[in-house]
Image (tube, rainbow, N blue to C red; front, side):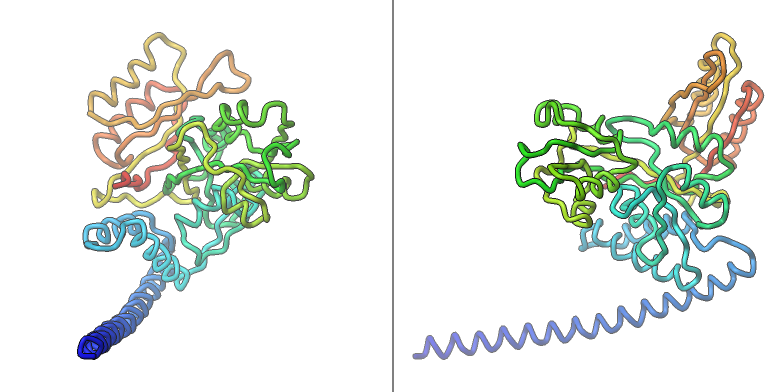
Length: 374
């Protein structure tokens, strides 16, 4: 009997402790909401100042600074969770200044859509468009404030059409984001053996060659404008399947027959943000990256000389690829990414030398460099 009474007392004590702790959490939640509202009020004031000076609401430099400070201040929450929370806080605060319109390769559920949400949060208006050209057009015409496009994949390399459009466009790259691009086999079939037709974008086909060869030999492959478009087509066709994101599968009501079917587990895609205006100089507060397109003169050693200018100033190249120039006699356009901002004295000097030695040079943008995942 005494043991039973003692256990009852202990239980009541624990329940009281839980109740007290929950009461403390409730008080903290109230304080958090009050502080968020105070933060939002300051964002509105900043928006008013920006409006008078004609500055953009979306400031990738400032947001990168905020993220770095949050990471340093954090001691308990998983970093991914913390950044997801503040992505929405920043997005909601930004929307009080102005609700931006974001163009992306649709339909809803593409990896580009996921990247756009990861960059801007949910407090914006997303506009799906049918192709890459339309993303550029929407921003150039002012129908969208920003556009999001993929530029390279860790398995398949550069997205060539995106590079070609960047070189021809007047838009600037003002930000970047890398996200996992896990391809999944989605279908209206119950078994893989029932699949007769597979819809896919060209990039996933390249990322999943071994899987397709082993698992779906002889299956008819139909190309789609995007991974989400492939999922949408598969949802309407008999004995059809698609390579797409799990999000696309949920949106279009498809079964997930097999997850992560890409040939390499660590499949990542890098996206960039397009804007009519260049991003502000981070001024050393965050690391910057610069992207450029350059056509060299047809002379021996020109590429070697180009690389030498970067090496001489210890500037780290993060990417260099070439694309053939249409209607030229084996002329090539080189796309180069490197660390640093175009306004940095050392880099400005290198750009002057590259301009002198090239047939044409275009700086596609200098923007905050995405930090390495910790």
